Structure formats: structure tokens, C-alpha cells
Image (cartoon, rainbow, N blue to C red; front, side, top):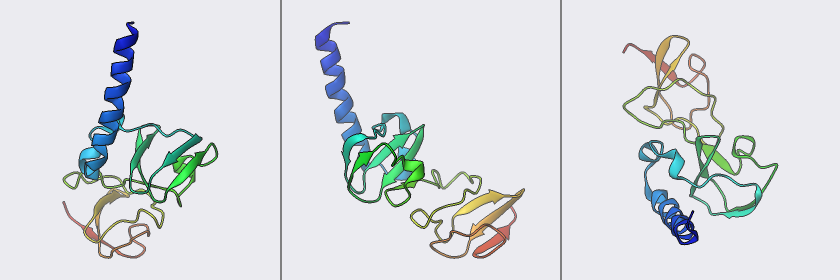
Length: 136
């Protein structure tokens, strides 16, 4: 391939990665492949940016320089998985961390039922606390 084309593609990729950072979570999840892939080799990540790892989108919670052992799924103090990608679609419940809890009004499916969170910062399993079963 022509070296000039490769350099142009790299330049455009960086511009795209920068531009998609302004998308809200629900739109960002429609184009996860456009986000920078997480790299554990000393990359500097800024707070409030998004990064993908294994096809999953994460918000960076605090500025840091990456290390191999700090994969997004294993470092909840550094990354929060985006759980409610599209408010018009009710996803299956996932156990959140304290860094990415469900908000009051979020809906999930769990154990064959649909639930709505009745509290903000909800990290409990539906049926235990902070959820109300609803009919859909």
C-alpha cells in the first residue's frame, strides 16, 4: 500500500477518535469500533474520555498512565463500563460497580422480569433493594 495513504489513514483515525469523544453514551455505543482501543503499555488516559476493550466501551474515571495489569474490566477505580447504552432498549441486568451504578428510572431485565430502579446509585440485584417489578 502507498505509504502516503497509510499516513493519511493514521491521521484521519486520530481525528475520528478525538471527535467521537463528544458523543453521549447512547450514541457512542452505536460506534464502539471508532474509539481508541485500550493499550496497557504506558498510554496516558485523560479523565472523562472513552476507550474500548474487547468491544466494550468504558469511561475513564481518573487520569492515569496505563499498565498491563489495569485492564478496564479489572480496574473499576479507573474505568466504568457503560451499562445503559440506549434508553429505548431494556438490557439484561449486569452487576455494576460503585463507579457505574444504575440511575433512578433505569430499566433492566432480570430473571424473566422487567424492573425499574427506584433509587439513584443502584448497585443491588433486582428483587433485593431499590428495584420495582413492572409489566412491559
